[in-house]
Structure formats: C-alpha cells, structure tokens
Length: 337
Image (tube, rainbow, N blue to C red):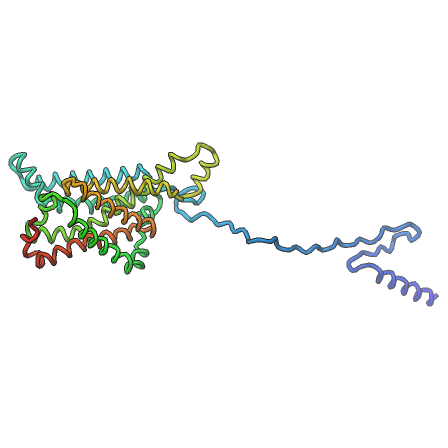
C-alpha cells in the first residue's frame, strides 16, 4: 500500500513537470476522457523602428489669448488705423494747447506761432510721448499680450546685434549724404527752418536721434508693416474651410505679403516727410530706399527695436556731419546753399 502511494505521488510530480510554467493542473478531471492540450503563449514578435527620419509634431506657440493656444494676428489694419488716429488726435490736442497758451491775437499769428521750430518740436514731442504711453496700456487690452510682444519690439535682439546695426545706420547715412550731394534739391526747403539758430539745431538733434526714430519705427514697422501684410494674406486666402482653419492655426506671413507691405508702408513713410523736403522727387526716392533698408532690418531680425537702432544711427550720422561742418553748430551760415 505504501509502495503504491509513493508510486502515485511520483507519477503526479512527473505529470506536473510536463506542464508548462503557469499552467493549472486539474486533479479532479477524468483521466479516461480526452483532455485539451495545454495553452501555448503566442510568439513574441519584435517591433523594429521604421526606416526614415522620425516625425516630430511641434506644439503651437504659447499665448495668453483665449483660444487653442495660437496667438491672433496683430496688429491688423484696424489696430494700425487706431494707432495713427490716436497720434493725429494727440498732435491736434497739443497744437491747440500750446497755441492757446501763447495767446495769439489773430489767425495769422496763430499760423506763425505754430510754425516756429521750437513749437513744432514741442508739439511733436508731447504728442509722440502721449501716443506711445496710451498705446502701451491700451493695446494689450485688445491683444491679450504685452505691447512690446504685439509689435515685436524685442530689445534683446537689438542689443545683441548693436555692433552690426549701428554701423549699418551710420554707413547708410553717410552714403545717402554723399549721393544727395549729386542730385538736384531745391535751394530752400521747409526743413531748413530748423537750422536757423543753434538752440533749434540742438533740439532737432535730440528729437531726431532719440524720440522720432522710435515713434516712427513703431508706427511704420511695428503697426503698418504687419497690418498691410495681414490684410494682403487675408484677401488672398482661398475661400475653403481648410484654408480658414490653417489661417487660425498659424501666424506666418507669406513672402508676397511682406513685399507688398514693405512697399506700401515705405510709401507712407516717404509721404510723412514729403513736406519737409518740398516734395523733391529725387530726395524722396532716396528716402524710399532708406525706408526699404529699415524694413529689411526689421523683417530679418523680427525686431522693431533693431530697425529703431538703425534709424537712430542714420539720423545721428546726418547731425554728426552738420556738427562737424558748422563747428559745433556755431557757424550755421555755412549751411547756406
């Protein structure tokens, strides 16, 4: 009896050893009935990577604006019109204010007082500062992002590339002055009125190298340039749902739109200075080239601060030449043509 039990136990161990690891041995099953074969795990198929470069899906840029995470296209044409209208309003308000404080007796004296260089510079200085300050606080409410981010100011890029940007402005200025000496220019232009006295010249120098370049670059390269480009791309957008969806998921501007916006914004830049140059077509053509250079810098660096630095350096080269030619602005009679 003991021998039979030992034999049976041995048979059970041998039977269990014949099952694969993890199988369940059913001791209650009827050995006389045919049994199903033990389950065999499926073969493991190795996964090899596909040939070719990996596909990388980039997330859309972060934004504080509401929506799927893609910032809206700003400044668009409506924002640009609003900025220009604000600047015009400030010019009118401060002109009326300063004229009112001067207490002119008649209309002729009103015109005369407004046309004085110091009054003009004061009006433009106050108007530019008021416009920039108001825009700094107002437009972020529309854009849901900081003002500098909306116009692509990017002072860090300008500071990092200052060693290249300043020479570009100086060389452009000296080159324009050399070329301008060869083209016909009227003997008397309104701009000459700002160079009658040393005090006027010093005021123009400070205004032309510090405030004017920044205000003009924010207007023309910060607002008008992207506004015209956005308008061009929108008008040329195919009228399909896919195109509309792509428009809302990207902020890129096409090269054609940038070329169009560069030309149009530069034309407006020239028109702003046309009165100062007595509408001399040769001088305006040179100024158009300068505007194209400034716009190219702004597009290349994606920084309005960079084009501002080039603009300020360009103006500084002009005043530096005048400073040297007139002995420190003491002999302005040398400027007589």
